Image (tube, rainbow, N blue to C red; front, side, top):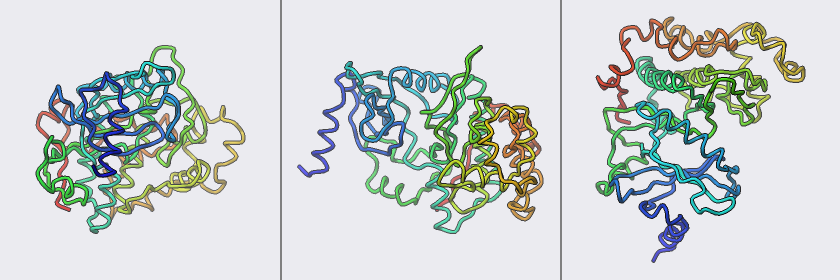
Length: 368
């Protein structure tokens, strides 16, 4: 037996007996919240994605105890039936039934291609996203966020790596045609009906009456200004900020984050260097921020330079209204997902959430 096959069998054997129905196929990826595997469900006869969460903090993963696993599973379960959200199937909490045991979350398998990878492939092939393409993608993501927020769920980690492309390729079958997976990896995908699905719910929170939200300590270039300033006064508009960042990335055509930085201070400098500081200083929660955080704001970054970054030749006035509304540094004035969908940029396609997906108004993935 080849060494790689032997290691895979050994890893499979390490899974708990309660998960014997799943045949592990391959490791798809890993982050600080867990690692994800592709597997075959022998009972339901379909490919699934299984996320392993560490109960002990091994393998470089943060510790995920029963409360953390329950929180993520609850948020995923609340989003069942939303087409633009990766669907939860079941959870095996502390599957080994031992102290600090690992837990597993089983989800629908969408595919191996995320939006970051797709953007980078488009850069390599010199195929910029048109405004119409960006509108189709943003329509789906905002519809998903609107429904998710309607269920009281905050994602808190919106970024291209957590947006998956479901194009119904051969990769989702138990026995894909020869060469299908290799073609998918190379980017030679020709599926013409794509649903963009939000996944990666490891940091998500469920809102509730009287429930206080925790400070978000894991920050990214997609974190909203109020989170970068360590505020606990936030709501679902932290997610629409992240979607605004994704919209900017799609339009820029670089494949990278517009606010990329090595630290939260560097990210914050880039954010306020583009969107300005006037909005955040006008926010009612600004006065309650720690002085050391406010001191990190750039002194000469008052006026927004966002339109300079995306002039009319790159983005129409209707499109810029959405972008600037999502990237509003004052969270009280920032667009919610529902508000963004009512803007004229989406006007010609304005429909209800149900009719939108029933009519299969999904993105078109061009041959790349």
